[in-house]
Length: 156
Image: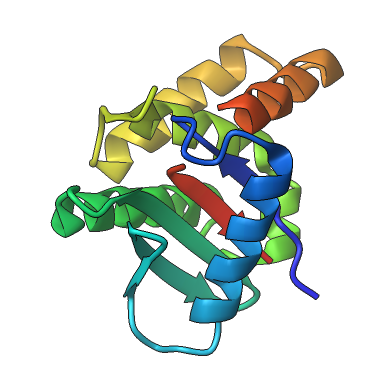
């Protein structure tokens, strides 16, 4: 069975955790067997990429520019690829969830795309990682705010 590692919602399209879970399951079921990189689902544009045992999703309204969503997805993937020394698979990611949280925050803030250059993202994450060691409490807060806040889903 797939397991959601991290999701971050930037609006209230799916206001409850129950609705978010149903949506996430629906996306995974509709996309995990296909080779394409884009899907339309529930009136939303979904761009995605899989690597080994991970799936990465960026979701926007159907009015969003697909190329912009793709740029965000590629930036996230390439940033993680650099941080994980090209070892983008589940175990490596689980050992570096802090890097994932920070990268997502550098790329998108409140649903607004800030950065699409992976070099810049990796650089800023490295700076922030040194300055702010994530305590248990911070991780919990990050996960809470991630739940409360649809644009990001990492599945499996």
